[in-house]
Image (tube, rainbow, N blue to C red):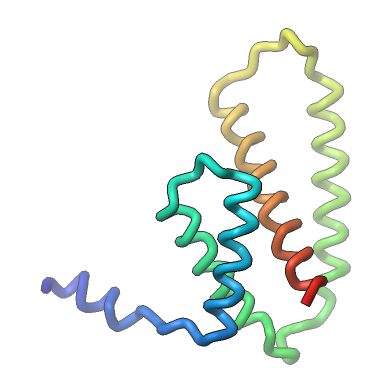
Length: 121
C-alpha cells in the first residue's frame, strides 16, 4: 500500500447509524431523480451529503445562513429567468453552456431533496 492510499485510508471515517440512514435516504432520492446515474456516483454523493449533514447539526455553526441562501436563490431565479427568456426552442447552445445548465439543475434538485428529507424528519 503506497503512501497515498494509506493517507486516504486514515482520512476515511466510519459512518454513524444516523449517517448511514441519511445516506440511504439521499441515495433513494437520487435514484428517483437520476435512475441512469452510475451507482458508485450515487453512493459517493449520498455519503458526502450524509457526512455534511452530521457536521451541520452543530448549532454553533448557524448564523444567518437562511438569509444568505435566500439572497443567492433570488439571484439564481433572476439569472435563470433571463437566460430562459433569451432562448427559443430552436436556439443552438455551446456544449459548455448546456453542461453548466445541466449542473445547475442537478445541484438545485439535490438541494431540494436534502431540504425535503430534513423537513420530513
